[in-house]
Length: 351
Image (cartoon, rainbow, N blue to C red):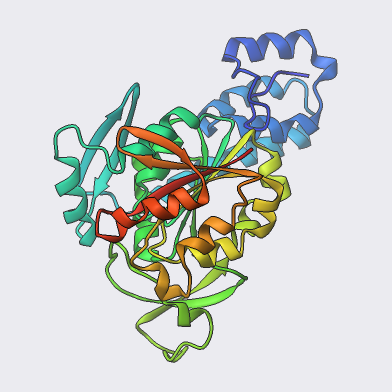
């Protein structure tokens, strides 16, 4: 069996082309067609094309033709996808240690936001989250970026080798995420246009230019006054954290990190994450919007109570420091954020 790099098998290094050829030549009798899905998952199309030349000696003709067809379709699929993705007018690159990530600036509301931030010297948006992700993510990690906006944390996680589910309810922002993935050649980014909620379904969001902090109102998950035939609203699916971090998905990775930054709807997301939390199947990094959470009939107490202290560590993340606190200490500390000092960011780690 030839050695294959696979995210589910992180300790297996990616072999060089010569290594693959040497193993194929030395063990032709052990090479079987069922290895092809592993090979296909491991390498980009151009490299697959080279490998296929060697495989034709060991696969029967019909199977090899199917292999070649798969490779051709993978190549044309990438070309087609990049052809319909708007390219940014300006590309800004930011470095984090040994990692450099590119972000496109578009003729949309997000462009003003991005230009103002990225042209600042030494800029890092929410540096405490950046620092943690840079240290925690590698190719054994699944990163679920809920409220992905235009892909800031998504691209950073992909640059570290992570596989990313970028969940964003504004379709125009999803296009920005896709474009930023193309700019960086990140093909482990998977964009999901959906709202996160307590149960599967559909909801509505205004069909507008992308807006930082645009919310899905709580009433939209129940009986929205907006007619379903509205021309000015998108109908988007509602998914749960449990549906994203299922047994097969979480089991394929050594570590799963769920980031929630959804402008007060944290409680709705956590109500749909009960199975994941009970199983301790993920680390949660949650931006708690104390001034908005009440609009969704939630509270800081409900967020914290979702993670029982006997089974979860609660770590307050701030610029330059991380402090482990219990529930009561976090509630006491929240006064500072209630007075307008940004949002409270807490990381919940299973014990």
